Structures are given as C-alpha cells and as structure tokens.
Length: 172
Image (cartoon, rainbow, N blue to C red; front, side, top):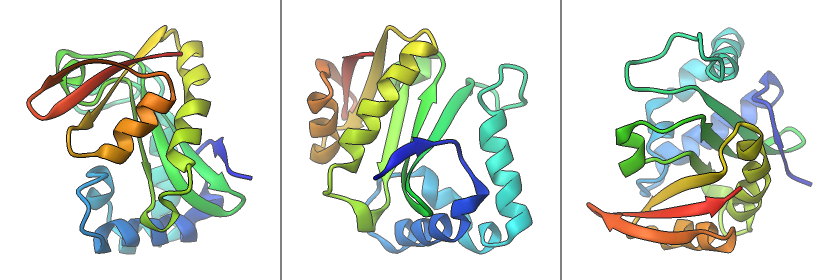
C-alpha cells in the first residue's frame, strides 16, 4: 500500500524511471522533473547527494536560492516503487502566494488516474499542520482539471484566479 516516506536511496532505480517518464511525456506537469537529469541520478553517489539535499532543504539554515523557503519533500512509494512526491513549503513569499502555494505534488505518468494524488495530498495535510500551517494555499493551472479535482476532494475552497492560476485554501 502506498505511503508518504522520507526521500530514500532505496527507490533510486524507480525514481530514475519516473524522471524518464516525465521527460518522455507531453504534459507540462510537473515542471521540476524536467530539470533533473536521469543519467546523472542513475549514479548511486549522485542520487544519494540529491536525497541528502532534499532532506536538508527542510532546515532553515540550509543554503538555498534567493527567494526559496524551507520545504519538506516526501515521496509517495509502494515499497521500492516511486509513484510521486509532495513538497510542503513551510511559509509563503509574495511569489508563492501567487503561484505555487504551500503544497505542490505530482504523480509519475504511469501511475496517474489511480487516486495517488488525492491520497498524497490527504496524507500531507496533517504534516503541514504539524509545521504550523493552519490552512494551506494550493494552486494549479486553470487547464489542469485533474489537479483541481484533487484539491477540491481534499476540501479546497476556491479563492480566485490570477494569470491562469487557480488558488485554493485547504484546511490542514
């Protein structure tokens, strides 16, 4: 049964396969995976460094690009199979208030339309609450019907639309 887990080197091969799926697909979602090089990540030492970077990102003192905030990344896995990820941003910047919000998620293409995104977001909301987020701002592109349904199934209340982005408040 799938569950949210800390990023781990144990799913390296499945994670690399997922990144290759994102690269091969025609969907613009998620954009982050297209910035990852599956050939580099297939090397155990490089993947271990990537996992360590993700785990360290939740710490306030970790170095990060200007404008970025601490974030907790969790992976949705079924044993050794990587199915998706959820990223919880610990606070909002003016930019994240417009696009991005507190929580982002994605499911690898071969695992879509099976309820994983809805379950991931459901399981991530109590974690967001533990981080002090009373209600999570979650956004999606206006043409991303699947993501909108995921947000609404998790109690999302529509706020508004800005520049092709829907914004929702979701109770944690």
